[in-house]
Amino acid sequence: QVQLVESGGGLVQAGDSLRLSCVASGRGVRYDVTGWFRQAPGKEREFVVGISRSTGTTNYADSAKGRFTVSRDNAKNTVYLQMNSLKPEDTAVYYCAAGPFYNQILIWGQGTQVTVSS
Image 1 (tube, rainbow, N blue to C red):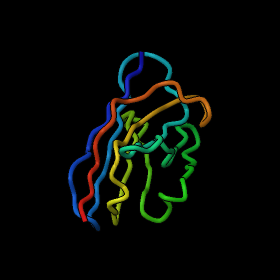
Image 2: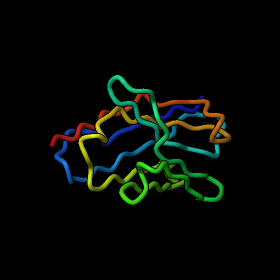
Image 3: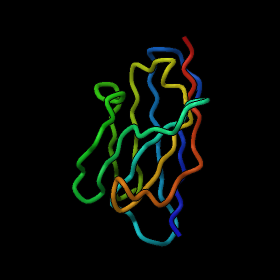
């Protein structure tokens, strides 16, 4: 079974950058869509950005446009989330997830904490 493992989170100051990584390992289907979601304390989990394995097309939430960039390296089974100009409101647990379609997410990583101080 495929597992997703995120890394790269941490504590940074406002205006700093972070790059998150999501590595898929194990045997099983490599789903086409990999997405990044986040959940802030007391809030519902929200979609941030997604990318297609087959076409490379991307889909950004409005909150991520202009500051976040998603990319992937299929040879390394890795999806990256480059986050620039971080704001305190970006503080959340960031999850990597995958599925055949954006509305059919089937597997999730354990999450990585991103904390942005003002």
